[in-house]
Length: 575
Image 1 (cartoon, rainbow, N blue to C red):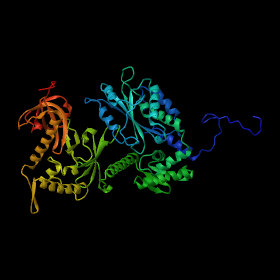
Image 2 (image 1 turned 180 degrees about the vertical axis):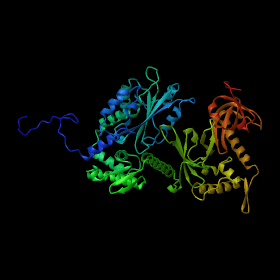
Image 3 (image 1 turned 30 degrees about the vertical axis):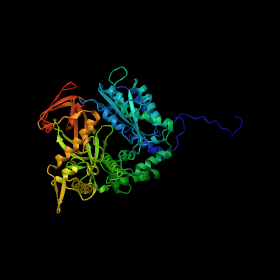
Image 4 (image 1 turned 90 degrees about the vertical axis):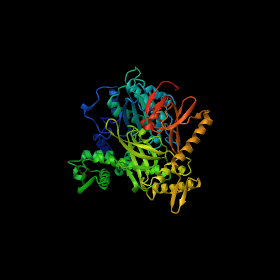
């Protein structure tokens, strides 16, 4: 440097202790308060006695937390260790759901990937079959949409995790773009590269991996600016969910009272305005009440109630999205949010995982009562395998261990529109003959069923299976049997044309035998095809049969009484 006014900038380390102290800005105080209250560790900090003392990644978790800064990018991670029970790991079902249609940016099915490229999800599920457990992670960067490549980001994160854990990880992932915040589902096999069970430190699962994910996002996008952090806090002030501001208010509360008067140490106007705005939101939600100037009493159970409000809002959004997306708009006043233990019969709107980490499921049913019902189930299997538009019924039962269970039973795979002109004995036909069945609402799905029943009646009259007698309609004798036999004969003829095998006629009480090869979803119900090598038989299908698909079976007692049949499994491919 030759000029006297030239300067040489010598940057020091971040937070150089030798640098002169200056007045702390509002953002610095807010961040410090949030960090002190546990805002940068999801769920709050644990006492030293609660730290994990075994498993891989303990040291790495500490190192990762130290590197995390208040202005780092925010990444939420949910994790679960899934132990494989006697029924086997539900890996295939879980992966099938993660790969469902509509989860990518362009609405196509999700593609499974791993460290090197696209992955074979079936092969991964097979590798996990003999393992004790596997890990599920949901990685949700707050700024996921700004990341150039979520898959590359995931691969970098998992490579870092391998270094932290000191082992190669066998993992697959699926990126989802069908929610407000894009996220990645990662499944990790519970086996280390030495063949032993993979045990990961609880600290690394809860904090370490999240810190590494935040570090990767910060490296690509840069740290958050004060403006970014301020905008995030302003959004929190109006949010109907548990937030970092709430955590800060709980930390500041004395016997449930939050005092924001200047004399209480809150001197920054922006600071006060932000917190007062949050308290007014809590007041509107019935979770805080003013007890004097700039003083509020907050609810003792603030966190669980806010989480419940957030969950309720998510359910309402889900119901509105699924109903309107299919053209079945129902007012929010007609939404029934869980807790309905009564009879629910209606049209299946949607079903899926309620908690994608735990595997619990939901179903939305457009009921005959004119209301839309949101139902919860233990797992996805309990929601049936019916497609949207099918007619389903909520049923309750007690399992062998005395636990109450709920399932969706399929009353008809056909939509009511398809049932109007269907060849077989439809659910509409049963309703026409059973006047004591569930009452119908005058609007909503109930109103649609009324119209469909009238149209079905006209169709049966045109087929010579019913006639009008004044104001009454007289249906043909044995209407249901006639329709069912007609449809089954037609289905059998198609199978014969396809396979060259003939339908083997059955009489009531005759034993049926053969290999269960396929299921037929007819208007008259679901039927199983049993192939004995020379011909085939069609018998009413039961869910338990799916476990014996491709296995020879002999059903003693007749095809008309499957509920009481004695079943025998053999290893022979023919009878």
